[in-house]
Amino acid sequence: MGPAGIQAAGHNRGSDAGVDAGDAAQTVETGYKVAIIEAADRLNTQAANAFLKTLEEPPDKSVLILLSTEPQRLLPTILSDVCG
Image 1 (cartoon, rainbow, N blue to C red):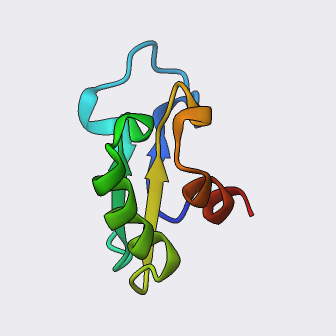
Image 2 (image 1 turned 180 degrees about the horizontal axis):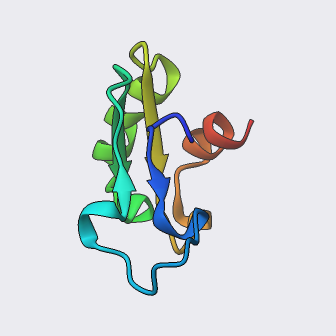
């Protein structure tokens, strides 16, 4: 199981043909906070600069996930913190 404590249903293929939606994922209390930034490449400069401080000093037990279809559009400072 990953840090978010989620197990995908496809990892355990038993004899049942179908998977009930309640069985699709199992959550576990871990104390982590997860933030998913969808379309991170579309943040305007002011928003990206404000978010940069969070990337530089993330809160304890946090996971930040940036989603982008055009990572080259991210600010270079964000790319260096994420990829560096």
